[in-house]
Length: 304
Image (cartoon, rainbow, N blue to C red):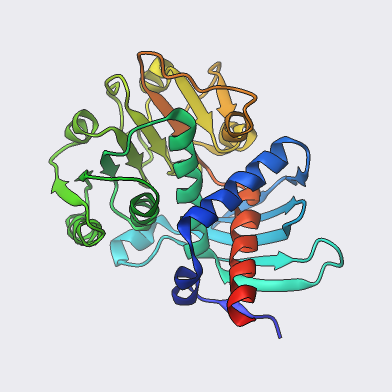
């Protein structure tokens, strides 16, 4: 019988430093030709996004994820992302494990964002959060386990989510401040996470030099960063260039995007110079394969 790993059990299996290294290894393998990234299928059902993603990473397996995005759930106090990830053996196609897709997506997205921090040598001393939903929580959790974080500044339109998120971050041991606007978050933070469902840019002012901006709101029609801000960046990283260009709501026309895997592999450098850097994530299946493989290994180890 195929074993299903729910959120509660999944969270207990994670060693965050080992988890991020598994994601790093998968990205490097893909960049060096040791993985496959088939086209993903997506559609809209009753105005909500549904996606089907498959991926393969040598030595890790084949992953299949069915995922959806229901933005309206935020107003109901329900998670906006739901899904299931299946991991299959690469040698004989045997299904190995089924995993809660919402929590796995949150963890692998935050892990890739953490890798963008190391790739740009950004500071995490003071974090900023624009948006206070589940993705913001996963980023706060993962960052608190991987980096030294002293303070956080938060802005969100939903008062209830804002207060809940603030309590959550404080429980992680981070001194947290509620702000009145996006500009205050940008001015006071060294790394800023934008995790919203906004269809118009929430960041339309250029950050000061040294700031690293992480945008994880996706896919279209979500649009978090203005063209003006993108044009002013010293470097723009993408979790996957092709996916970002085809699926992100922001306008990247004519701009140079680097794959995160290029920088992690040492084949490119994301230079800040005297400016700021941007990382855009829309999510793709290599991240799911890496995360599922890590969970599978941890589960087998714990069951042995």
